[in-house]
Amino acid sequence: QVQLVESGGGLVQAGGSLRLSCAASGRIFSIATMGWYRQAPGNQRELVATITSDANTNYAGSVKGRFTISRDNAKNTVYLQMNSLKPEDTSVYYCNAQSLHYYGYLKVSEVNDVWGQGTQVTVSS
Image (cartoon, rainbow, N blue to C red; front, top):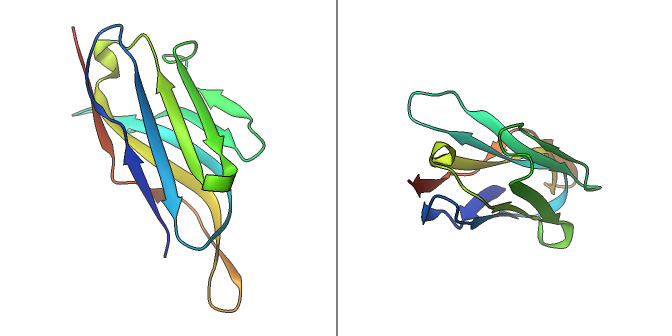
């Protein structure tokens, strides 16, 4: 019914920049919060940044000042601009949606904790 598709990962040298995008598809009515998480091998998935529909943002301390999250509500898309990348930023980055409302059969339905498939970001030293 609904899915999140990430793009924009890749290989970059330390100090470089990347921009990730995540588009939600389906018959979407609204999405309360969208965000980015990351998971490195052997580590737990961790929060990177979130943004609400009215643009309130929250960042992990490790990325504050380097990463910027934004969203286009009309396109149901969230972005993550990553600057001054460090080798420790190397991870699979996952897009997430909370309180996603979509047009179901005869009603608007809600689903929480929707995840994308992930995109690899590798930062070389």
